[in-house]
Structures are given as C-alpha cells and as structure tokens.
Amino acid sequence: MQHIDPSLIDWSRAQFALTALYHWIFVPLTLGLTFIVAIMETIYIKTGNEWWKKTTKFWMGLLAINFAIGLATGIIMEFEFGTNWSNYSWIVGDIFGAPLAIEGLMAFFMESTFFAVMFFGWNKVSKRTHLLSTWLVAIGSNLSALWILIANGWMQHPVGMHFNPDTARNEMTDFWAVVFNPNAYSKFLHTISSGYVLASLFVIAISSWYLLKKRDIQFAKRSIMVAASFGLMVSLFNLTTGDESARQVALNQPMKLAAMEGLYKGQKEAEIVAFGILDPSKTLKDDKEPFLIKFAIPGGLSLLSYHSFDAYVPGIEDIVYGNKAHHIMGAAEKMQQGKKAVTALKAYKEAKKSGNAKEAEKQRAIFEANSKYMGYGYLTSPKQTVPNVPLTFYAFHTMVGFGTWFILLFIIILYLTMTNELHAHRWVLWAGVWSLPMGYIAQEAGWITAEVGRQPWAIQDMLPVGMATSNIASGSVMLTFWMFAILFTALLIAEVKIMATQINIGPKEADHV
Amino acid sequence: MIKKSLHWIFHLYYDGFTQMRTGKKLWAIMIIKVFILFVIVKWLFFPDILQEKFHTDTARSNYVLDHLTGENNATH
Image 1 (cartoon, rainbow over the protein chains, first blue to last red):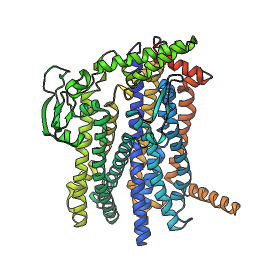
Image 2 (cartoon, one colour; image 1 turned 30 degrees about the vertical axis):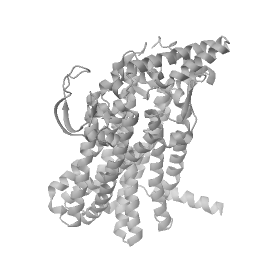
Image 3 (cartoon, each protein chain N blue to C red; image 1 turned 180 degrees about the vertical axis):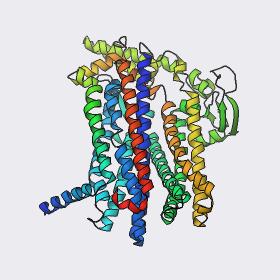
Image 4 (cartoon, chains in turn cyan, brown; image 1 turned 90 degrees about the horizontal axis):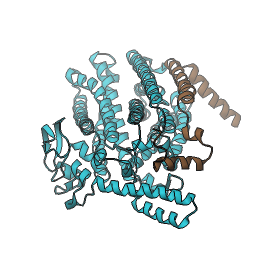
C-alpha cells in the first residue's frame, strides 16, 4: 500500500474488530432467545398450563437483560464508519444506505411497539395478541439482522452495483441482486441459526445448573426439553447453512477458503482437515509441509466446495502466483490491471478538469475495462493478498469443532431428558454448563474466520483496508480503542452480574423482572 | 376512540415501568450508556469527517477521488 501509516490501519482495524466482537456477544442470544421464548409461550397458550407462563416469563426476563445491555453497542460501528473509515463510507454509501435505513426503521418500530407489548402487556392484551407480539419480536429482530448481513455480504461479494468515477461511489444498479446476493443470504441463515444454537446452549446451561443444585427441577427439565429439541433442529440446519456459506466462499473468495484449510498448494481431490496443527515457520513456496500434525478426510474439501471429488481447489500459492493449467490469474497480473484502472481514473479526472472530453472518454473506457481488479492497484506485493493463515485456520476449525460437539450434546441431552435420566448423569449436566462459553467462543470464531479471512479487502478485490481508512491521527484511534475496551468490559460485567442475580433468584420471582 | 387508545398506550408503558424491579436498573444502564455514546463519544471523538470537512457532495467526491488516485495519500 502506498504512503499509508500502518499503525493507523492496524488501530482502525483493531477498534472495529473489538466493537464487532463485543457487539456480537449480545446479539446472537437475543436472536435465538426470542424464538425459544415464543415457542414456550405457544406451549402455554396451547396447554393453558400456568407453569409454562412462568417458564416463559423467566427466560423473557433474561432476554430483557441481554437486550438492554446490548442495545446500541452496534451504533458505535456506524460512528467508526464516519470517522475512521470515511473514505470507505463514501465509496459504499449508496449501497449501504438502503439496507441500513430499512434496518433502522424496522428495529425502531419493532422495539418500541412489540417489545413493549411483550414485556408490559401480559394482563393488558388477549393471550393470542400477546403471543403474536412475542413472535413478531422474534421475527423482527431476525429480519433486522438480515439487512446488516446483506451489507456485510455485499462487501465480501460486491454485486448489483457500478463504480461511478465522477462521484467515487458505488451506485446500486440492481437492488434485488444486492438483496439476493448468495453470499448474503447464506451468511444470514448461518448467522441467525448460530444464534439459535447459542440460545439453546444458554437455556441448557442455566437449567443444568439448577439440576446440579437440585432446585427448580421441573422448570429446568421443561426448559431443557424445549432447548435441546430446538437446539438439535437448528444445529442441523446450521450445519447445512455452514456448508452453503463455505461453498459461497469457495466460489467468490478462494483465498479465504485456502486460508481456512491451510491449503498452500492447490489439489484435485483436496482433503478437508478435521484436525491439524500448522507449522508456524511455513512460508509461501518454501516446499515445507504446512502441518506438523493433521487428520484429514481425502476429497472432502473438493466435494464440499464444488460438489465433486475431482474438483481442483486452488491453494494460496495458486492464487498469489497464478496457475495457468487451471486458468487461475495471479495477483501480479491483477495488480497490473488494478494499476491501469487507478492510472486511468486519475487521467480521467484530469481530462475532465481540463475540459478534454475525448481524452476523458478514452480514459474512462480504460478504467471500466480494468476496474474489476481496481483494489489490486493499491497493493505493492502479491503476498499482500494473503490473510493471516493461522488465525483464519484455527478460528474456522474451532467453530466447526465446537459446532459438531453441540450437535452431539443436544442429542445426548434430548435422549436423557426423554428417558428421564438426565439428573442422574452429572457429567452431562456439567457438559451442558461448560458448553455455554464454548458457544460464545464459536460465535466469535465464526466472525474471525469471515473477517480475518477476507483481508486485505474492505470490499473484495475493489478496496483494500488501507485505502478505506481516514486520514486521521492513529493516536486518537488508539485512545478510543481503549475507551471502548473499558466501556464494553463494564457493560459485560454488568450483564453477567445482573443475569447471575436473576438466575440465582430463579423462576419463582420471574413476575418481577 | 383515539383518546381511549392513547390512554391505553400510556398505561401500558406507565404501569410497565412502575412495576419493574431489575428493569429499573436496566433502564438506568441504558440511559447512561446512550448518554455516553451519543453525547460524549459521538460528539467528542467521532465526527463525520467528510461531512465536517466539506460542504458539498462534489467536494467530498473530489476528496475521495484524490485519495483513490494517490493525490492526498502522502499526508498519512
């Protein structure tokens, strides 16, 4: 990258990562717990059993705590867009405007109306109206996430737009292409279903703790039954959406996929690594084995990525240096095209300024012909296209490993609950308790995979992060980084403390959250 | 009809807020948080750089174009 202060880029990235990771502690639980609460209330309406009303109200109380503490933590990212990422904000403004405006309106109306009916309306509206409000909160909060993930999906796979060299903005040419971006909806389904898994783990963990303490036993068993059934169903769905999400990565972000699997040299019948330890001394083209230890399934990666055992999966070296036999263009060639685009953009701007319409038209044509790889024009070495491989690899495998364990846990717990033996298996209950932090780690690992794996791009192939940052002092970004670190940590401590108090009080006092 | 609806909505919120226990603590946290975020953090530390620096979209476009073509990168 040219003339960019690396510490500014690093602090801006670190601040955004910190904000996003903290924000994502609160969001997935809200996404999932709203559905669990809605299911419990539906059972209450169907059976008329007041126990289910009490159960619903207890979990609704914990949902309220999580919602209140997490509220507005995401808005900080919008502040950062305007200050730390002003160039990026300008360039994507036209694309992000519509989804984020819809999200804002949806969130506002949902939160101010249905949330109020859900929490305050137990004795003020009919049972069915209350139930409808609870379901609308669940659906609304998930739809709210849809618009954010459409924006994120667009950055990973920009579609339905055209870069206007007069305004320096990406202008939307096809709203539906942006909305139905395959990267966006696979990401949306995978993300919300992971939230449902986390919420199921949350209910199981707290209920398991009650069973271990031999208190509120019927309440805990009833809650576990709902959470384990829901958890098993959504974790299987999460598995299929994860597969589709990875397939989209294979098609649109092959470098990310190669980093996720530690695949340096492309292969036919490429194996998928179930477990592996990377050699930290491995560098590009050094002929060393990338792994110190690995357990891999032959052909698995080819099959999952391209639905064929024979499919060639490009490795990091193929993407950096090119592979003519498999028609893969190297980063150096893309850099040449990108530099042509940047040079033509500059010449176009100058020709327009000097009123030379013919030259402007010529330069614009050159720009349009090369703009697909414009972002590569800002790189100084093909190696800059490689993300942090160990971080991407371990984050991805942590997510997948934990996700697999959750499926097994839900099956075991569901079976033991149905046979009424759960309370006799304390190790399972402890496993239920300890799986909650694992659920949070898996959530964060998923985002690390998605975001670290796509580096160095702010917008895939179009804008590297170094060009997306604002021209501000890195010291001020550093200062606000630590400010947020303190603020978010305080909020997290408040969340854990208030929730722990409420859990300790238990469902008997659930009427008074 | 409208008066009755407004009365109902008022009491939905009023009764809800007055009957809260933990909820009061949560509201206090929310209000403090929103104050810190919007009044202190946003106002003091997070100006919208392009909005503050330039008055027209053309000026903002030119600034970003200069950035993209390498004309104002040297100051980083």
